[in-house]
Image (cartoon, rainbow, N blue to C red; front, side, top):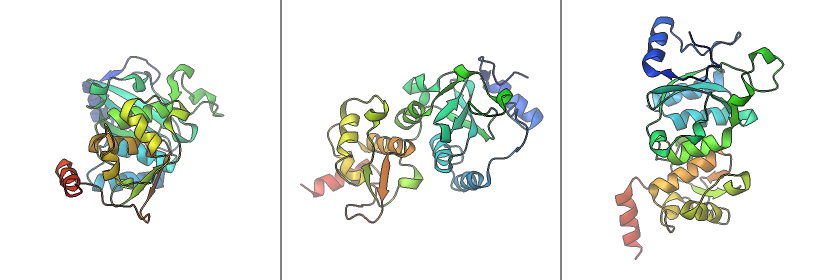
Length: 250
């Protein structure tokens, strides 16, 4: 069985074969707890019952909410990428930098399994369980890549529904590169509290782009979503509803 530190990624067929034979992915190499923390596991079970158990962005969002590390085995272009999230350290561990993946490939990203972490974060006293230093990478760019280019184009369940939104931090201030309409919308959200349907109508924006921007801000702990604000409105269910709403305002 390959070592977790091996920079050569598994093929999906090999991963599935090991999982069928052993019941695990082959990446869980730490002694100690063999299950995820109870609070995170409860959230994952809820997502599973809602039919979102294989939604990459929802699983990442759950890890960020609970500040709990987890190993996500992701299918990317026929290969398995073991990505371990460390939300409290704002780092992730992976043999390769998933934040550099191409947008078309990220759009087809799939979740194969969610497991307890297979390595410790840098600086942990159990240093022999810490991975290679070069395999730890900043988490924020990955979160934005998944939000803007990943397979999910709808609002995360945690921030969906009747709400109004405001950005409490600028992505640019944290080194996130944005341009064009997305950058303008992110800056405008620092000054205004508005519902999703309003953001969709800003220059260069759409339902897809607005939802992805809000998801990215949420994952980066830069979004205030409020249900009680006077501007709170139900999210549009699709492009037709947006078009009808715009037409009625003329």
